[in-house]
Structure formats: C-alpha cells, structure tokens
Image (cartoon, rainbow, N blue to C red; front, top):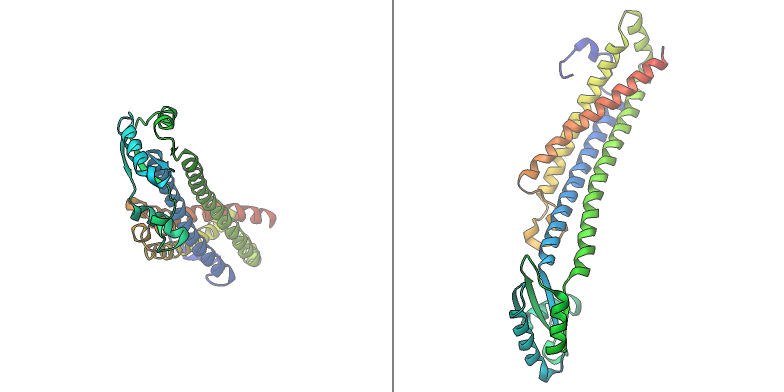
Length: 291
C-alpha cells in the first residue's frame, strides 16, 4: 500500500478536482471528528462528576419566621449530627446564600431583610441515610424543614450528559460514513474521467486488480494526508480552548485530559482505512461496469 509504484501512480491523475476534493474532505472530517471526540469525552466526565458529587449531597431548607429560624436551624443540625449516614452538615452563611442567589437577582441583594430560607448542606457517607426516616423526625422536631436529596435533579442531569456522550459517538460514526461517501464519489469521478486510459491499460495486459490497486493506493494516501492535517488543526484548536478550571463550565472543559490526547492520533489511520474500503469497492464496481 505505501510502496511507491511509479508506473501505477501514472494511472491516477496527480492533480485536479478529485485530488482537492479528497484532501479537503478528509481534512474537514478529521477536524470535526476531533471536536466530536472531545465533546463525547467531556460529556462522559460531566456525567461521572454529576453522578458522584450530587449522589452524596443533599440540602435541608429551613423556612420559619425570623424569630424561630436560628432555633430551628440549630435543632436541624442536632438531628443531622445524630443521623446515621450523614458525614457532615453545616448551615450556609449569608454570604454563601447571597452568592447562590446573585446569578438570579444580581449583586447587592439585601438578603438580611428578605424572608430567605436558611440552607443546610448535607454530605452523606457512601452508605447514605434513610431519607424517609429523617423526614419523619424532622417533621416532628423541626416543622419548618424541607429535605431535598437531589435525586430528582441528579438523574435528569446524568441522563442528559450520557445522551450527549452518545451523540458525540454517533456524530463520529456519521462523519466516518460521510467520509466514505465523499471518497467513493471522488473515486468514481476519477475512474470515469480515466476511462480511456483504463481501456488502453487493459489492451496492454494490465489486470483489473492492478488498475484498482493504483486508485486505492492513491486515494488512501490522499485521505491519510488530509486527515492528518485536519487532526493537527483540531488538536491545536482544542489546545487553545480555556481549561475547565478557568471558568468551571462545560464548554471550557472540552480539552483532552492525560492519555486522551493520544486518541486523535487514531483519526488519520481510521480515515485511511475508510478510504481504502470505499475506493476498493468503487473501483471494482466501476471496472466491472466497463467490461
């Protein structure tokens, strides 16, 4: 495949429409594949993070008159300290609650003068606690307490991240199929344009396997070259994106991590494999039709 055959290479035109189409298509598809791969891996990390962090976290909300809120908060903390499965519990300060509300109401919110419930952050052990039992005890001792175990929030978020990861892999498969289709079209165009040359080669004794091999080798190498360029461009684009720690958001966490940087290196060989199969099938079909 990678051994140069000057005689066979002259069968395929070294330049022209099909050359530009093949190289450009391979580069563009490889570039998109790198981004789809980064999206899929980032979504997988997001699903894992949400599943682990929210699974061990709960919130207790104390809604009570101003004169009773502190007493009920202390009573709730006492109940939580005696509850098996609760690793720690602490009441959020006014500054922390203000920071939580700031994205919704803007800075400078006078939280002291508003009837804002007191929030208690609960961290569970791996075994967790009995939610129903805790609710019954809180109902008896802290009537203004409402327990939120984050289950209704965690499951949709994890499901959404998992589906986003699946979407990334489906996108990669579609990109591979589109690459194969474009290479097939380019190979068909090249074979049709060189019909007279193929007929002459047959007259001088060239076999269909020899002719097909020349097209397969040339289109596979073109696809590999274009995919390598697109892969490098995609990796550079991912490299210059802000890291997840700079803003903490999903879109800022698209960089590859650790050994994941090696995965894009598989894109050019896989693209070449797709081009090899597509060109071989197209060449056989066209050569049979010209018989």
